[in-house]
Length: 520
Image 1 (spheres, one colour):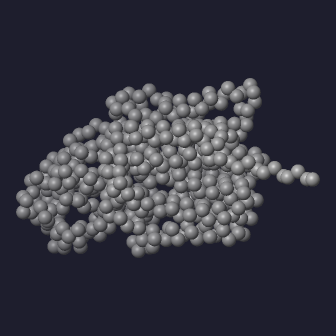
Image 2: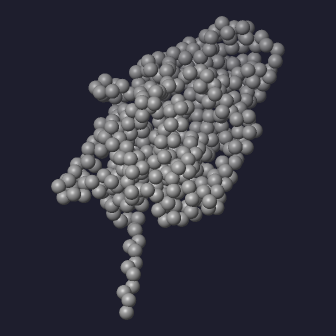
Image 3: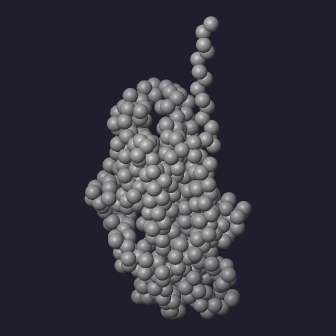
């Protein structure tokens, strides 16, 4: 009588260290919730919150998903700073869990999962992503989700998983367009490896069709408005606003963003994807990294544009790292390495999440052995890095606008608009203004331009941050109200505010509105 073949052990989600990973992810969520309200709203958060009140299928500088999620957050959690930043914190904790799950799918046991989770938690760029509501907060989870389904497809030789890859990629296109770079890079990786055979299966093309269908509403919106995001990117490039990095500088900043202690882990992941026999089915993901890196270097992308790709590389690197430490004499290094990774994250945490009061942070920053990178030329002179500096100064701006508003006779207020030059000030007015009795703002910047002049004649305007002589050429009466009180930590400071009355131009504000477009 023949012996029955052994039944393969089914992997349990809660096996091999996953309970510890879940505890680590929960602790990260708690830490974010404790510290995420220390400063104030970030400039971009005002943008998303304003867009959340004007729901649509697209916006000049972003797809619609984050504003929709912001609207959901406002309706369910409230409008406090901690409530607005709960979803970003949750998304990063989920990214930690998914990274560990990928390590398990790649053959990792308990240490590999815990190490991958610790490295994701301790990476500065992800600590920052979980601290603010931006388009970066969901991006790592979506890219990692795509990688997860690609790995399942290769591991089980099951092309149906590519349908899920396409579904997640389509959602990603509604969150931030840069996931298209990852999709393209994966396609190139498939062409360059044995996995090219999946291109002959219907499921990968159905996945591509699913991505297209999910993205279609935003695509139609872009067509309707003549691709404003493309125009925006072209203007930014022509203006030379962003700091252009050499290939070496770009790579070194990747190591810094992921913290130097974590860098050997994801670099090992890249090497293992190319050269470790056990990872041969996943070699296309190694090519996907190199292609994505090359695209962002050639396009002079900001240093954090590539950040969402690293969880899969951390997971890949944790598996051979675990195997290397399985030797009896080296096993003591397992807990030590996890402690070192988390300690490195704790050391860098004040730079990327608001765990310190601002005065103590400035002292801490001076003791760092490196300068915090600046991604735009205009940020280099600021005392704080931009992700902190743009959380200061907004109350001062709105309070000065309120001074101007209170000088407008009540009978004239119905036709007196408040015009801001950029979405930071415009969004701050929209968010804090109701407490001062201010109406929603006007602006030609980004999506505010599409919202138009809202029926104002233009005969009376409160104008922020403009030139008095220029305004005098357009209005008979230009009254300087004052400058916003100085905030030494803010990028936006000493903003002049004017009351302009008696327009000299014959046309209406709606007719001159196209000339006020400011997309950059």
